[in-house]
Image 1 (cartoon, one colour):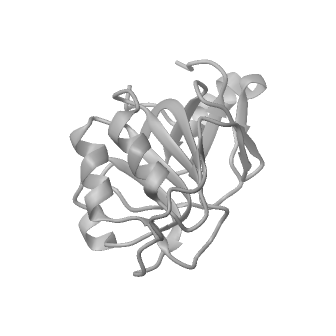
Image 2: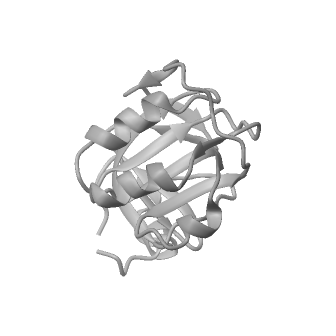
Image 3: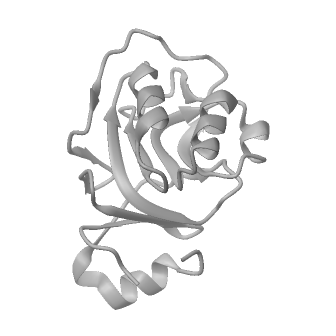
Length: 160
């Protein structure tokens, strides 16, 4: 289902959706994607994010709460390549990416708040699989996220 529009889903399922208030930028080749949420919370460290990319189920959307830090990038072309090769639907990052020109050619959805050329730390600090809160949305593993050119919405059920 790549022909959905978040605006239409909001019109038909308003009682079941949360609308993210962050104005993400799209960096991946896919501008429109959806899937089940898998969560990671980190601060300027992408080790747990990489682990999630390597073992979450196919078609998932990895949601990363990088606490809105713009001090470094949590994803670059290498991690995006892993996401695409594993058949993930997309990645949503409350933080930054790098290698943005390369990301535009990688067949995965990638949303982030901006870019920064500096790589992140590699200490393995953070949390996987927890409930996240950012952008006015509660992100729970197993919920469904839908992203397109108009924004990002989350539902506790699959929308059609």
